Each structure stands twice: as structure tokens, then as C-alpha cells.
Length: 233
Image 1: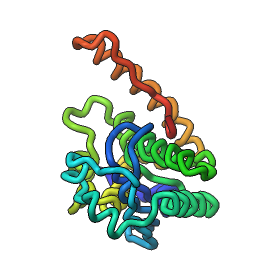
Image 2: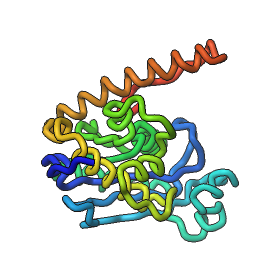
Image 3: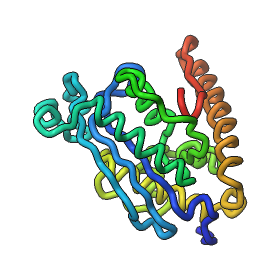
Image 4: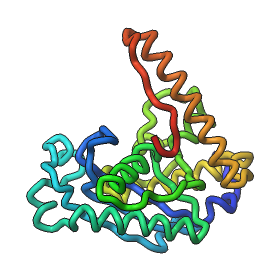
């Protein structure tokens, strides 16, 4: 893989990930969260993590993925209303500092956070306007690569270590390092200003959703629909 210095947008990144009770952005609740900052070599400069009592039962299927049971969340977790406020403010602080927010499949995590903010009467995270989503970018720059596009698969492809998948901290940091690896691998992408990259991802995600919807409809699901809204649905 061709290595070039990362662009300025990739030098210092805020990284963000949630683990939740499910996959429906309108109903699922936050169980764990991580907001951190990584430097040019992927080194961890700052990190903050939350274990949250979501106020509802955590389905067994979700516990099997991220390892947090209802009993543990109730015993050790922060009240959801307080946690959601803290997560939002920590991300808002990162944006005020001019840091891009990296999240893998950002439209899921940022949408869940917005729904949770609305649920508890908090102001939602403004914008955000400088988001970097390695999933959207990877599918755009390497459209025809075969195989899965999970974070684990992206880490393997770009040579990023991921030791504890589905841990919010491990996933957030790995996503940031994948973003930096993509910036090194594609110099033309690395040269784009982060605001322009954000706007480009809006278009890429919309186009990717259109193609995916067409594929699903051609393969036995004629009523299938999906949203291409990004970074918040």
C-alpha cells in the first residue's frame, strides 16, 4: 500500500462509538459510549468512556455482542439522561476545538445520539459539519472490492489492529486509525479540506443507498427501502 503523509484533517481526530440495545435508531438506547482523540500516528491522546443504564431491558442478543447485561448496567451504569448529556457535550467540545468526528457508519451512532437527546429533552449535537465516516469513504474509493465492509473487515484490509471488536473504545479508536490509513492510501483524498470531504460523503452515502436499494429490489424484495441521509437520519 502506498504510504504518504496524512492530510491535515487526519492529523488529529475525535473518535466516537456507541454500543446499544438494538439496531433501530428510533427505539434503541445507549449502553456504552466512547469519545476520544487520537494523534497523527493513531496514538490515544484523550479518552472518555461511559457505561449507561439505558432504563430498559438489554436484549440478550445485544448483550452477546457487547457484553453488558441489564443487571450490570443497572448496578454500575450512569443514569441515561445524565450520560446522554455528557456524551453530547464532549462531542460538542471536540467540534468547538475544530476536530473532525470519526465514526464508522456515522449515521447510526449520530442518529441514535440525537434520538436519545430528544428523548431526555437535551439540545441535540449541532450539525455536526465535519464528520469522517470510514465506511462511506471506503465504499466510495474502493467500490468493487469483494467481501464484507464491517469495521473488522476494514481493519484487516487497511492493516489496523482491532483486538476487542464491539467494545466502544476499541471500535472508536480503530475507526479513527482506519480513517488515517485511508488518508495515507489515497493522496487525492487526503488533500481534500474536511468541509469538502464532509459534503462529498453526503453525496456518496446517498448514491450508495440508491444502489443498495436497487440491488435488494432486484433480488426478491421489491418493496425494500433505505435511507441515504448522512450523517444523521
